[in-house]
Length: 346
Image (cartoon, rainbow, N blue to C red; front, side, top):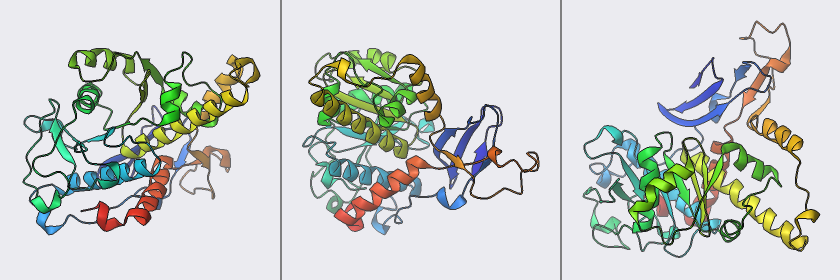
């Protein structure tokens, strides 16, 4: 189902009553007529909850666990991990109204990204306390018992989950090139389409204070992220992507790491001399940002008969692709081929 906010042009893509993507359409400086392929809305589906876990999770939480488990496998394949460290978290839908909520899902410390399954993820509250769910012991075949919460992961992620109510998915990793860029004074530069995506979504920087295991850092981290930015570069540490959905968080991390790889290589090719690198001027940057706002839009393949107001002018008909969903779906299929569905969704 597609909901369109006629005032702002915001498009909400809804699958099974769950928000899966948001976009803004303003390609023509007015409210265009939106056409979308319903088949492209529910791009990522997962196996039903196993019978021995039906009493542990709701169907929706099981879907979220599946999407997060495969996200860890995707991150492993992209080398966005560091041994047993780094975290991807997902807020449990509906948990804001639960006693002690909200809750979020994260990896059990000591489990590698390539070992994460839907049932061995931990469910924790904003204080980092594990919520008991009576998961069968044979489902926790790597870390026995309740599990372990790594404090830096809890400190970073709980701070954002507690304050940014638009954010449901947070992706943090130590990609080598992204972490290297975080160590520079100039940060991410507008040198590529991927970088312009990051800049358009909003990026800010947070000074390095040491290991993120001190809760007193949380207010400063949240203040530096700001109310709308989806990217926070932890200086001398690495990137955080904070997005409405897991699909958008993946897309963000993909483009950010790609942008950093280009930037590192261009600096190496130029011998570190900024004067030898093509950096857009202010006027060009404005045009780059304008085009990036319409990143997901394309002309309609066929004229919509529902729009009777444009007198045959096809330019007012556009398709809004669910680009994050499409990108995630390909990455998901790749992970499923490598690891096997039965090893992820269990």
